[in-house]
Amino acid sequence: MSSGNVKKYKCRNPDCTVAETGRCLESHTDPGACPNCIICTDDDQDQDAIISSPVAGVAEKPARRFFSGFEIGLSEACELMSLKYTKLIGVIGASGVGKTCFLSSLYLMMSNGELCPDYFFAGSMTLPGFEDRARRVRKWSDGLLPGKLADHTSLQDNRAPAFLHLAIYCNKEFNKRHEFLFSDLPGEWTSDLIERNEKAGRFDFLKRADGLIYVLDGQALSDIELQNLEIHRAKLLLDRLANAVYVPKDIPFVVVISKYDLLKNCEPNSIHDIVSYANRLGFNPSVSLVSAFSSVPDVIKSGTGIEDVLERLMKFKNFETKKIVQRMHDFCRAYGRYLE
Image 1: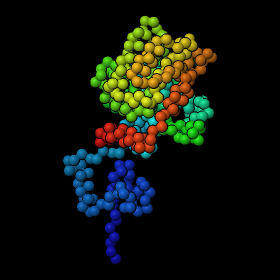
Image 2 (image 1 turned 180 degrees about the vertical axis):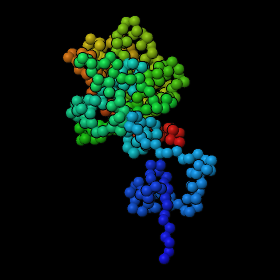
Image 3 (image 1 turned 120 degrees about the vertical axis):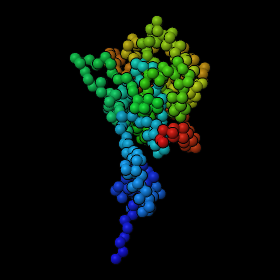
Image 4 (image 1 turned 60 degrees about the vertical axis):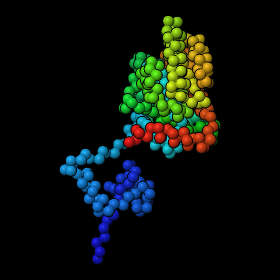
């Protein structure tokens, strides 16, 4: 009776455990039939044993990393975009203007079914991240919200952007599913870009953006002593986005005026100067007055303006299939170095 040798396998897919379990991640009955599978010879197995042996003085292979769900990095973003077209939305603005509050309010309203009936929550790959950012909203004291609703954004890798994922069904399009990645960046990134043109490289991902949200502090824009500085800095940022980052100018661009509940129901007049300058640069921005979490809910409801922003972002230009594939390919190629 012949002593049949048991086949051993390796896989090019780092998420596959066929080497340990003998089962193919792609559900092939015979793992050897999978195009990613490598059938090991005895020499291969011996070599692997030498390489992985701590006695050999060679560092062991790094353990596989699993997705935390708190945020999506560039490597995960590339993987997601390689599977399906995902709309990348850049959310920018200085520290304390309300970027994280906006994202938290969007998530809470969407997941609770409080937006218009045309949009339905279809899931998120970053639920722990959204919940972590929204946790302060659930802490009330004597019937009042806490003074600070969001922690300062910090990234796991301060050299690369992070994203929050949100999937939405659109009833207007026969329940078509839309995949979104919203950037969640520290406000210092925006401030650094305003002050130094060489920081534009951090924002290279916006060349692939399908939409842009620029959050401005409504109180500062309404303050007679602060508004001139705010206008100046906004113009500098717009100039950087147009001439250093090269953000596409045919995408939806929403200027969000935050803290609307503190503006006495008035739009700051200073915003017109900013919008006019953006138009001269070739952008076509719209303005949305937003109160993510209102301090006067009887007058202005929490979540005011969130639906308006989402409506504007849903109005994407219809790209040809060839162009869609090219945009996905360009993004993954540009950030392929982060996958190494």
